[in-house]
Image (cartoon, rainbow, N blue to C red; front, side):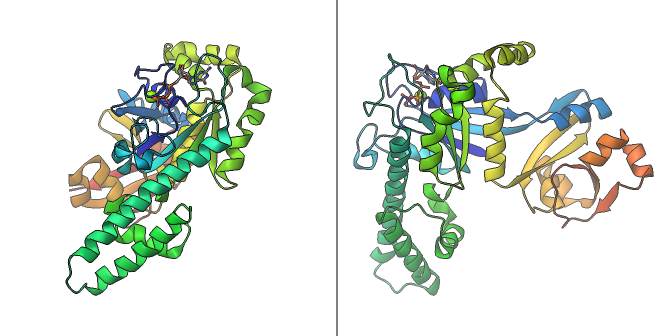
Length: 361
Ligand SMILES: Nc1nc2c(ncn2[C@@H]2O[C@H](COP(=O)(O)OP(=O)(O)OP(=O)(O)O)[C@@H](O)[C@H]2O)c(=O)[nH]1
Ligand SMILES: [Mg+2]
C-alpha cells in the first residue's frame, strides 16, 4: 500500500511525512522546501499484534507497513506551469490513495502561499489542480487514440467514449469516480493512474494551541469542504513530528502531558486502511509473527503469495483461526480443541483478523 501526500506549499506535508515515517526530511518556513519526492515507510500499530506476540513468543514481530511519498507543494495554476508545475505529480500516479494535508494552523512566522489561512479554499485549490492534471491525461490519451488515422477496434472505440465523457466531467470541475462509466474507465485504463479516482484522506493540520477542545472547530472548514462522506483526520503535524522523534517508551507519557489523545497518525493510518478497503491478517511463520494487509475479498491463495510465491504455487490449505478466538483461548492448541480452528481452500476470502497458517508443498 502506497500513499501520496499532497497539499499547498507549507501546508505541513513534510512535517506529517516525518511523523509518519520517523524520518527527518527538510521542513522549513518557506514554501517549496521539498523538490525531490521523499519516500518512507510507516508501521501500522495494531494491539492485536502485541497479543499474538504474547501467545506465540516469536523472536520478531513485524507490523504491516504503509509506504508514503511526500512531494513538492502544488499551487493554483500548477497545471499551467505555476510554482513547480505539476510534473512532480508523476510521483503520485503510482499511489493507491492520497493524503491531502490542509494547513489550519496559524503561525505568524510561517507564510501561507495564498496570503491567509483558509482551509476550505485550500481544499478547493488542490482538488481543482488534481482535476486539471487528470483532464490533461485524458485529453492526451484521446489524442493518441485518434491520431492513428486507422479504423479503431471496438475496444478502442469504447475507450474513446469513456475518455471523452471523463474529460467532459473534469472540464466541468468534477472529480472522477462518481459514475459507472468512470469506474469502467478506471478498470479499462489503469495505466492512466488518474489522480481523482484515488481515495482521499484529508489531514487537517491544526496548530498546537488548537489541540483539545478547539480541535474540531479549527478543522471544521476542512470537513465542510471535503464533503460528508470524506475521511477527515485532525492532527497537529508539528507535535506528532516531535513525539515521533522521542524514544518509543517515552511517547505515551509525552502524549498524555501534551493532551494528545489517540495519535493523529494512528487515525490517519486507520483511515487509509478503510479508504483502501483492506483487511489485516496475521501469520506466524518461522521466527516471526507478522501483520499483513490485503484487499477485502482477496482469496487465501493471494494472501499466501504475499509471503512467498512458493506458498501460492504449492497451496494446499489454509489453517485459519479468527483473532478473537485465539485471543480468548490463549493458544492455537486450545483454539483447536474448542473447534474454532478450521481449514479453508485457496478461494477462501480472507477475513479481518484471521490468523493463518498456510500448508503448501
Ligand atoms: N505551528 C505549526 N507549524 C507547523 C505545523 N505543521 C507544519 N508547521 C510548520 O510549517 C512550515 C512548513 O512545513 P513543511 O512540513 O515544510 O511544509 P510542506 O508542506 O512540506 O512544504 P513544501 O515542501 O515547501 O511544499 C514549517 O516551518 C513547519 O514547522 C503545525 O502543526 N503547527
Ligand atoms: Mg515539504
